[in-house]
Length: 196
Ligand SMILES: C[S@@+](CC[C@H](N)C(=O)[O-])C[C@H]1O[C@@H](n2cnc3c(N)ncnc32)[C@H](O)[C@@H]1O
Image (cartoon, rainbow, N blue to C red):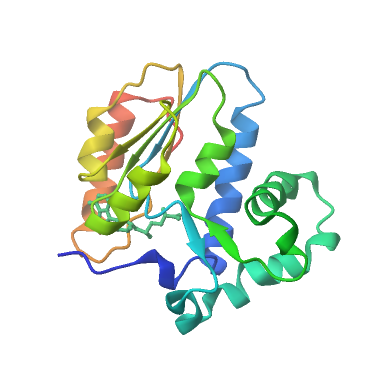
């Protein structure tokens, strides 16, 4: 029985690092036109309310994305633009001072979806999976409510010539450490040009 809920941690420093790396990788890969299969093996929810009881209980976003947002005028590198644009797009004009909402990995991926790209998300937690399925409105986004590691392997090689996979377990189940390593080895055998 899974009990981890990412709502307690959304927008913390690790999310900022992970999602900035994801945005930078997707941007660099999209300098070429050919289609990309995106896969998100441990998706969580698509959007988190930073004012929710869960988020306020830990306050983790205060030392993560809220700090980044407060410093946004000083982030001169163009590498930050996709990150800031996703955050501004989700929060609209309400985002002058503090962000109210934070995108989970499926929403970051969706920002980068072009016509020839596709996104498969995997989520095992029943309520997270349900919320994700309600959110996914495009035929190019699939929500699979089963194990993300074996599910990702089953999808390889993808239809598109390129592949970007985010593997982000909560490590609630201790065998995840070994399973992730073994899965990545198998994934590379099935799709050597994938970016994992
Ligand atoms: C760290 S959170 C994901 C955060 C998300 N990737 C993001 O960046 O916004 C891990 C998620 O994996 C889910 N999960 C745990 N084991 C799983 C499995 N074997 N397959 C798919 N999802 C799993 C959990 O329910 C949880 O929602």
